[in-house]
Length: 165
Image (cartoon, rainbow, N blue to C red):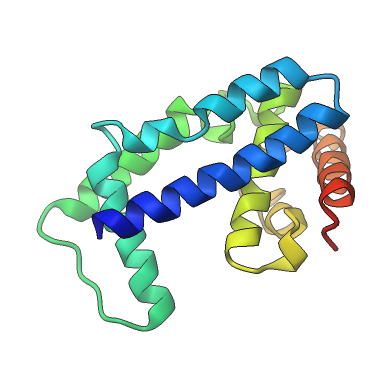
C-alpha cells in the first residue's frame, strides 16, 4: 500500500507540475506558479495526512479494481480529518477560502492544473479539466460569473497548450 501511495501521489504531483509549468509559460503569473509547483500537495506526506491518505488511496484502488475494502477501526474518521486538513491548508482548494470567489488567479490556475492531472490519471475528458469543472462549479463550488469564466478560460488555455481535446 505504501509503495502504491508513494508512486501514485508522486505521479499526480508531477502531472500537476507539468501543467503549472505550461501555465507559467503562457500567463503573467510565472514566478508564483513555479513556486506552487514546488509545493503542490506536499502536505500529503506530512504527519496529518500521510497514513490516512495511504488508506484513502487504497480504498479508491480497490473500488476501481472491484476488490473488497474495509478501513481498519478508527481509520475512516482519520481519513475524513486528513481530507479536511488537506482542503483547508492548500490554497488551490476552495475550502481553504472563506469565499471561493476570493481565490486568487494563481489559486484557480493551480486548481485547474490539479483537475487536469486527475483527468489525465483517469483518462477522462481527453485529459481536460472541463469535466471536473462542469460537475463541480455550481453544485459544489459557487463561483460568480467572473471567476467561473476565468476558470474556463484557463482550462481552454491549458488544453490548447497541452493538446487536450
